[in-house]
Image (tube, rainbow, N blue to C red):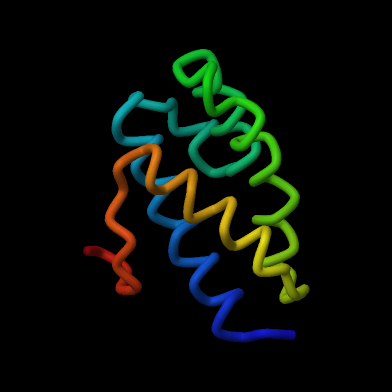
Length: 93
């Protein structure tokens, strides 16, 4: 496993999830699930729908400590960039 790659992906996914729930006032019962959050907000992002769907299994692997590829990390970085989310590596930034 590449801990640095997975750590970076985890932090970016955290920022993406938080950004989307706050921006779109996602109901609390949906916010607890990354998957349900993505399904809820996809209508707002038709151009990112495919990438957002692909982020779900990546997020699941990261959260279960399964290594992801550099290509998968790049996809997460592209989503963050498209959403204009800071690529900071610190939670809360």
